[in-house]
Length: 263
Length: 265
Image 1 (cartoon, each protein chain N blue to C red):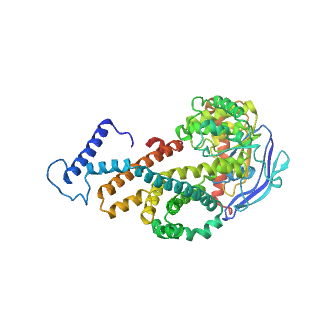
Image 2: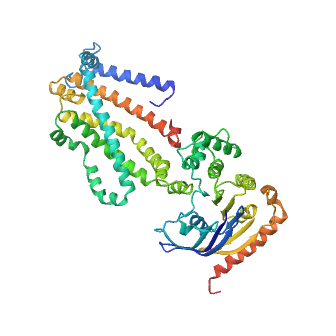
Image 3: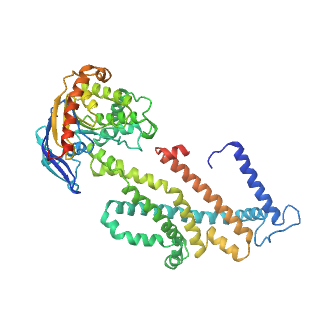
């Protein structure tokens, strides 16, 4: 979180506590004998916490979390590398870009997760289909940013390198790659959450492990506490990953005026 | 390094004729100012000398000799030329130090040597303490100073300058002009300095070449008799400066009036 004043921090904590208390009360907790929601519809926070401890104690939580995170991580890496490579290709060769443009636009307008069922058909219930779905969602973000990064290279900087005696390779190293990196880093946050979404949705569609799988299983058994527990867990994981990438982005792009001042 | 331009004509494929039959020379170690109205093809002239006009952009005719070699035949003479652009073209992702080192890096100089050389120039330019600042963190004047020493760092034999101080306030401009004179007097590089400001041209140049409106061509050349190294602050206030400025200005405005009347007059 961005550092706000201590007063704001206190108020934030109070807000969360108030929400939790209200939630607890509305689901029959705190000994008030009042129940606005059935706990099979909305689980009670204390029950969710107890169930999470149970889940963790059995060792399953760590395993599921590991599976989901490794799928997301592999998807992020492979999709990122693929996006950069294809983006560079398209950026450098105008003809390639012109010919493939409609195809890329069509693939990009396809809601990403709709390919999940076919991926399960192709790659089975194992990790591969999740990695591929995650990769597919990340790929386009990174691809478009790399492409724009190459295209928006400042021609004056290219001239400057040429005048200093630089060849094509040095132009790439000193101008194109830093420019592309700035675009890719700026897309890091979006990519990280896309990668996680891809992995979890992949697990929904067909899988035998992972947080998404465990959540779907719990929902089928009306194990509402677990569904809520995993949702909250994914929220915490998502927030942490986005925060880590925000810091990485800030560090890598510290030469950029706007980001430095926002920090 | 001597630069000789002979019968240079440039016509862009968009149809715009930028230069028509431009001929002039800059001797080794000379500081020549090229003056003309905006859009008269001054920058195009520099780009042609630096081999920065790709054939798919414009048709170029004429000859450009650098030290007697026709560079249009020889395929350019980059690397021994420096070019300071109108807008500073610093790499935004490199610090002041990293920018100054860039040309040396291209030449494959070892890191320690490169840094030592860059640091020395940073001292000369009065940028000590700002080595690790990024371009957006320093003022426009400091950025242009960094551009200038980035060019000096790799020790080119001739430097082309395209209105490098155009975007700066009047005072910073005078300061940088005196710095340029000081550095030039020490190193005696060949400098071709483009500006649209006649006063700046007279302040700096040993000779002033006047360009007409587009399509640009050389209309007149003036010798500027003031001895170097000059002090711009003092020179600007002198009556000799005012006289010369007035004399050149008179012919410039006559040329413009004649042009405004059109070719029929």
